Amino acid sequence: MIRSAATFVAVSLIATSAEAVTVWQGEAVIDTATAACNTIPSAPIRTDTVVKTVLKPKNVPGNSNLTSISFIANGVAMFALVLDAGASGTAAGFGHTSSGVIQANKVIPYSQFVQSPPAVTASTPDITLSGRISDFLFVTNCDVTFRAAYTQRTN
Image (spheres, rainbow, N blue to C red):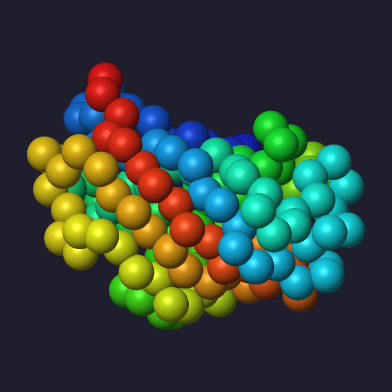
């Protein structure tokens, strides 16, 4: 199971030999964070924390019909979500905690996602995204709101 989770995350966010995926990379600012977020070893999350993020929108050449988004906190925790719907729903969470524990196919509620522009194509240079995520970084009751800005990564 450990290998499959790591493989899934890697394949979903990097190019494959068959066809390169199209991703946007950037930073997200945490606008609100519950108290549980401050207890994360090596990567406490507080209001105004900045994390690295990668967005792989659905239905863009090389991408699947599901959107995925990943967050990297302090270079030690990796949290990737595969979204099942649009603005609200339940995501499948993959990655590893700040303690190095691999997580695979965890149920992660999300809501209030707003993307601009709403329709993304391979020629969209920049994207913004905001929303709310429960159990951020796989920490129970660590609920955050965020706003992120992305620029398309060129291969």
